[in-house]
Length: 219
Image (cartoon, rainbow, N blue to C red; front, side):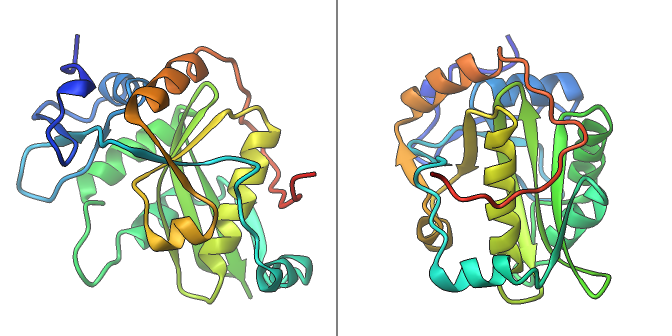
């Protein structure tokens, strides 16, 4: 067993300290509802907060103004064109970042093996927004997103949610609730419910190769 029981996490969700970012450890972590989040110069910290934030197809909120942006094709959206560039852009934060070099190396390795994916948003040939996350079966755990153009991260999120659920994803995890995610339709569920759904989702066979982005609205 690589991790303690997530129900033993402290009030902030901290569960374990140490270990490595090997492919095996990361996949086991995500299958148990655990993810790494730490700063440079300290051992890996593993978290399983309660509650967990997720987005459902029926809860995704696309405002009228965002629908206009999507309909007018202001941006070009791609999938897995430049995973590492998205990660590095997500890590450029004035307040500091957990997306340190060893995280970039580990998640890029997951991407090469088909366990991590990125959605890129382009404008006039420049990368202006995107998100990335880890996939395992029918689970997609979104890790981070960024934008340098208005609405670009929202466009990435809408495309990611619609595309992934269309391909068979059943759980779209966004880890912790923020006001921005709430405005996009994220909801909170108890950790126990989340883990039950994840344990079932990771056993499903879902093909996320050669994805084409879609922002189709729920019927």
